[in-house]
Amino acid sequence: MRTMMLALVAVLSMSALSMPGSALAQEPQAAAPVAAVGAAAALDPADGALVLRPSFLWGFIKEDRTHGFGGGLELLRYPNASGWRWGVFAEGLGQLDGAWRVAGGLSGGYGVFGTQIGLAHRTVGDYAAATSLQIAKTLTLGPAGIALRVTLPIHHHQPAQLPAMERQGVEMALVFQLGWSFTVRGVRPRHTHSCGSHGHGRSGDLL
Image (cartoon, rainbow, N blue to C red; front, side):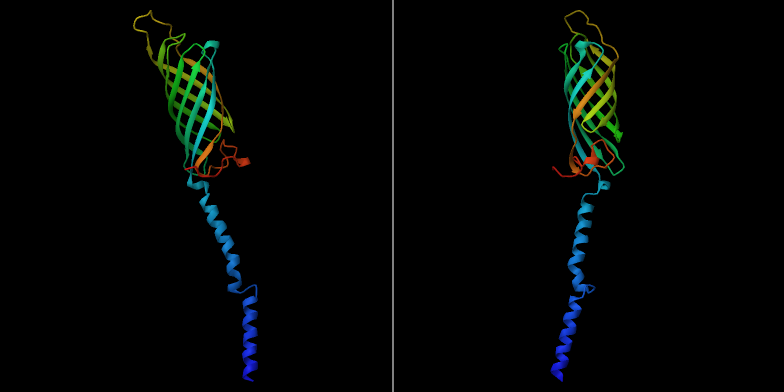
């Protein structure tokens, strides 16, 4: 009799362990959702992102000889998932009149729209060298971008031993941009200019 009871208890114990609703059976299934939640939390856009954007530039101004070709670099910080960003920029262009133009400053924006403000310096070319205030409104769609740039002269640098050169004055230019955004750290929001709908550069950590 005792042997039959022990056998019955053993059978019932094995049945309980094999039932789908048992706690022991659910442990392996519960591990997968926990791991998925942890991975999603690690890639949360709300934590912000750091983005580096190098680009090729073509500055189009009304006179042919003041067209410029060069490159630019932006380092942008997305503080959260809202799409707002801020950062710094630097650019350099060689102009067809022989002058070199460099600029740098602060940038900020939301989504595809942005604003840059900083200082620019142009060396001697067809016009006297000048240090200026640069303000630009940008529109960026994936790798392509365009900016309306206004340059307001602050100081002209005339040659010391030559006759005074003509001043260019206020400069308005269209700057065409071809570049790509690389996520250095974090995840960018989906509604930014980074072509997030295709998943380009949306995650990763290069540091």
